[in-house]
Picture 1 (tube, rainbow over the protein chains, first blue to last red):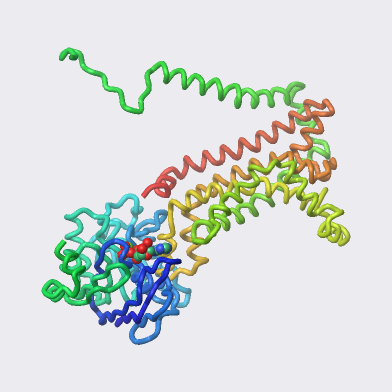
Picture 2: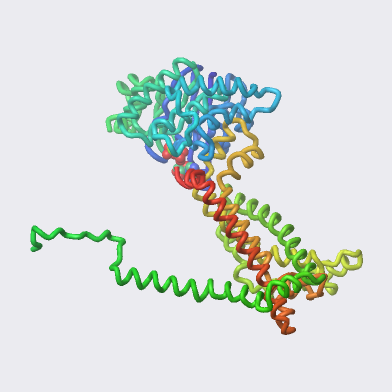
Length: 239
Length: 288
Ligand SMILES: Nc1ncnc2c1ncn2[C@@H]1O[C@H](COP(=O)(O)OP(=O)(O)O)[C@@H](O)[C@H]1O
Ligand SMILES: [Mg+2]
């Protein structure tokens, strides 16, 4: 789904987390929001997901104004920075949560929910962990379960906040490929936040470089490398 | 220089010398015995001084029965209400950002720092026959003071902080991420509360409710002021115990005290049993 961010700004009291920013994300793209800590990446992602509302500006989904849509109506698959798995539920129950939360009329029958959860567990290549609790999983496994849980609601887009931030280097490389594969099989418009320029450049089709609540440059990784638009971008990507 | 043949014994950083350790353990044991166990045993010993029959008989008369029923009724009303208010307060304080938050947290503790007698007097002032509200209510047949509603109000005031105080630190530590996750998955706020918030706080909630219950059944000061101590009507168990004791009916007084103690002990046993049975989930809820 095509996403458009139109002159969005966000104030937290006196701090301006986002100065008016605009951005068009083509349908099916894999986009990285790249920038140092405090540059407004999470805020922008949360505004897309409906967890935060902009002070001014509009969000458009497939050309329709979505600014007033509630978080539930957005149907965005959101993967949180620390995964936010439901600690008192098994992996199976975590993944089934979104389907069970649907109103009776559109809720799939129990057997169908079980079938879908099993399929998602296969997709993330962890077919045997359905009965475990989040506390019994490794960091990489938790991240993949969080991804499966977000995919279960058949989202219109996928939003991930520092999905690899809490993992060690080796797992990080593996899961990068995992996200790429899932993006390619589902074809979902995907936006992920990162402060790691190598990760952004390697994984994304399109990179949005942010600094202090502003967008510094938007482009393909190769173009940003070849022609950094500002001094900030030049120093940040060479770091 | 240490001799190579004698092995060196290392002491862990948090380990004390044996003497210090034994002194501390001994002090703890003596303290517990004198302050906690001895009085407990004394209560039961006094109650049974004239034998089982006398003790049970003293609990059988109408006034004693009425006191026991009243105390259970008050706890049955005050505890669920305070649990609901406590959850609401803790939820509001931890899930939203607003000005004056620190002040509100302090305010929740107010009932702990105000003397229960003063709290009782406030209720008499607000709802007594001479007050505007109280006068109107009495005229319409709903007396608050010297009646059940006043006693419930007093009990609720005194026990209000227990639930909220248990919940606030737990909810602050857990943050909002799981609730937000539930919302992005399409759950309503209501569903999120029942399926995510409540299960995550259930142990703290249970603990708060049990403490609240123990205190609600045992409250004396505030209830003494608002109840008017009418035998067979507004005299709760603690009030009845005091009246019996003042009349030198010590077997009756201690028998009722023993019942109150048993109720408190049952509460504690219940908590321990639940903790043992759900130890695995308890651990899962506390640590990721
Ligand atoms: N809930 C909030 N309340 C107040 N300030 C906030 C809040 N969330 C973010 N901010 C501020 O907004 C700015 C951008 O934050 P954020 O979007 O989290 O940056 P990033 O994800 O790039 O590290 C920071 O200065 C941060 O302190
Ligand atoms: Mg962030």
